Image 1 (cartoon, rainbow over the protein chains, first blue to last red):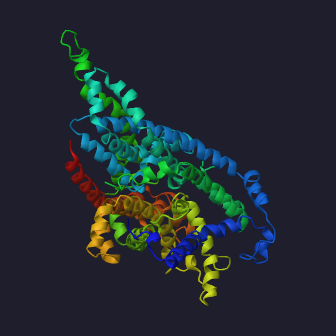
Image 2 (image 1 turned 90 degrees about the vertical axis):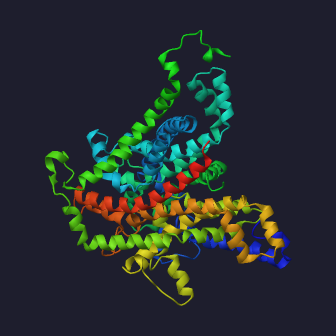
Image 3 (image 1 turned 180 degrees about the vertical axis):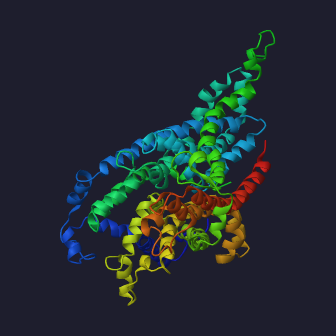
Length: 282
Length: 310
């Protein structure tokens, strides 16, 4: 193990380390802690210039209550959910199939198609912006959730295919050969043999895509504009102009907007990290 | 022998060609979606960049073909030059996330009580959307209310208005971007460190290697896959930077924090006008820069594929 385990070092070093870690963490999360503190302050603290002292009163419920009951925030949150969940389902479903095709079969152009997915996944969004916006407008889907969902599914299929194909490659190939010898139809091999083995990959991808899509901002501004379809990342700017300079409410609003992926991460940590670090170890 | 290979049962065309047809059918929906929304639009953008078009109506009716004039205009566009230069700054400084991530990973690669929770808490800036990171940092930098100036004040420095100063603003935004990116690189390296071969480390220790030498000659070579991925995601992240700029400064002050991705959006979609052709030309330039890196990434992956062919 590197560096040398702290247990093998002198007692003094151990104690230093154990105090250093929490201190470093506080320093690391300082900007976030500041926002957390802002979000429970009353308005009067800001007008009195009491930014960093003890809050003069604890206004957690008032501030967060305002976010939920006196703004469009719940609508934006719902939109985000209605955009994110279908995208996750769509992208994972499509990539299970493409990953299966590219991972199991040998045919001409296999690697070419695979590399097309990878390359497309790396391009800057801006090169797609004008044509995709035009396409969405022409389909009558501008400023709708479905327009955003369709694009997200298509784009995420690139990354998901990379992920799924490599995962399927690592499965024992003998299993599929054995099934073929038994005369099982190809689609049954997919449905009854490969798909059940892909469960961990599906879980990992689902959490990752959930986070990516929930946090998307660029496409939200390009393809939507009002509270009818805008997700929370775009909605937060209108929220902030509603409560301009009221830092306690803006802070509470951003925390609420950021929370769902955070909860997702802590609940599904193992899958999340497994997905993110796929390929970091050989 | 089983049914599938039994010659007495007549086999249909479908069955005989199933090894070709099955992958085609499985690929069709994914490839179709990807082609319509990703591959074809890349070429369309190249095409649109040779037009002067305000985005209304059909390109063929409302657009005016101008050849390479949009690109010629870019050459003398001061704002484009600033954006390009800022992109270089982003690329160079964003790469700091890699050594910083490695440093934190080495710091946290211990087994003390609660270390798992520390690791996840160090990681979690990455999970927050860039929009919120941008807001959090723009409040952090506020000249009067911001925590940064409070800390600087303790040391007798400041106050500075980072986002209001054209010479500092870009660096302030990059620092905000480094926060989640470092967390990402950290988690990649933590996973990599987990897989470092303990026998090699022990052998090197017996040979008297320690500290920096051990890190440089024994550990880092073994972390190569993690470094590769960290490099890929950091380069892409740097060139995609849009959210933070849009939230923190909206390109200002005086256009000093624009990058190509943001300038393109401004030209094509914001109140500065709907110049789709000119915007597409900027996007093409950004794409070509990215293509250099994409080419390199694909080439590296292709080499690995060749090695792992079965």
